[in-house]
Image (cartoon, rainbow, N blue to C red; front, side, top):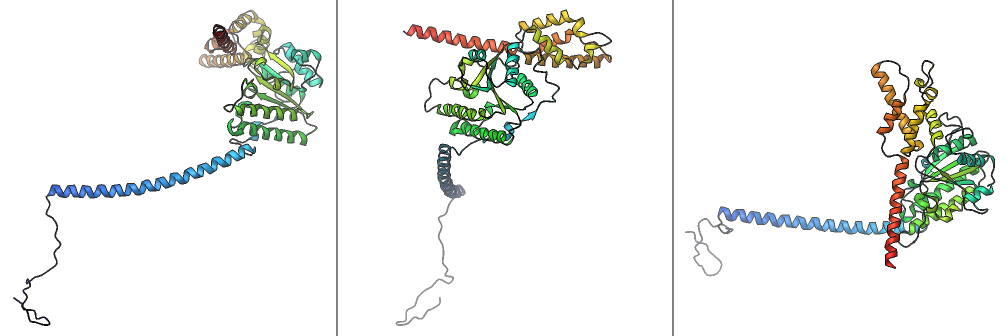
Amino acid sequence: MNNVQGVGTATAVSVPEKSKTVNFRAQTTPAQNDSVDSFIKEQEKARKKAERDKKISMGISIGTFAAFLAIAAVSIASITGKFNPAGFKKSQMEFKSLVSDSTLGDLKTTKTLQDDVKTMLVDMINSKEIKPEYLELAGLKNKGFPNAAILTGASGTGKTESIKMFAKADGSDFAVIKMTTFGNSYLNGNAVSMSEMFKEISKMLEKNPNKKFTILFDEGDALTRKIQNIDSHNEHLGKDRQSFITGLEELLRHKNVNVFMATNVPIQEIDEAVITRFGRNINYNLPNAEQLFEGLKFHLRDVKGCNLNGANFFDDKKEDIMAFIQEMIDKKCAFRDLKNVTTQAMADYSKEMQVLDKQLPFDVKYLSGALKLQGKTAGEIASESAAKSNSLIEFLTEFLGKGE
């Protein structure tokens, strides 16, 4: 034992020979150790999750505030007319000359167009005055611009093609503008896009006063249909239509432009405010036998097999051709259907010659076979659509009648 001498009274103190600081830890079993480790890990995971949630919450708060500022900015811009979600693109109206386009027939001599359609279009080229009978057909009295017309008729009846022929005969640059390609209807997207478009067109017309232009607004009913009730849910539709009317009026004051609007719906479904801006309403019907025959000749004009070894398809096979054309009339085919049928027929004809490795005269069988492969025609689709519409009207009439 070691004796330690302290200050003051000498006292003998006993100290363990190897004294050291000892940290006591409860003795645990292996199972308890696992439980403790698991608890510690869970606590650490919970701490990290809490930190992550805090950061996410802060990020969401910042994002929400930023989104609020963006919405506020967009709302202010839309109210002031300076916001356009899509923006007008000049590629939406590419003008080009059709004077040398050999795929287009001659407007003045073609037999594929209805006589009244051809007469009205030729008259628009020759005169800027509207004849009284045209005003009467349009239901107008000294109203409307002489350089504008609404085209109505089923899809594929030749509206676009006829205006291309018009532009070719008129010597004017031509552009098709689809009314469904503008920006978002909400937040004034359409209205702003159209305003930009009309400004661009007006600039072009002013810069080229000695040049002529023809514009076709296709699928016009997308923005010009009647709206029975306008409220907060569809207020944008009224703005779209008004923007179109305002721009159209300014556009038609230029003397070097002709404007057409094509639609598949009846004229009765177009808003009167739009109709009165146009000087003519031109209705297109499904083609008759003569028009289909002339159209067939036009589409097959480059098929050498139609004049093979002195034989003439249209003279020698006229009876069979007319029987085929009657099939087309029965199926309510439009010019677009005729184009599809002839394209398929020529492909089948070419394929058979390749298989047999010899020249063959063109035959009506190729046309009949192609017609059988076609789905519903433009006329059939239009008829079904009209039937559904009439059925709905009859149902509503009967239903409302019972309610009285």
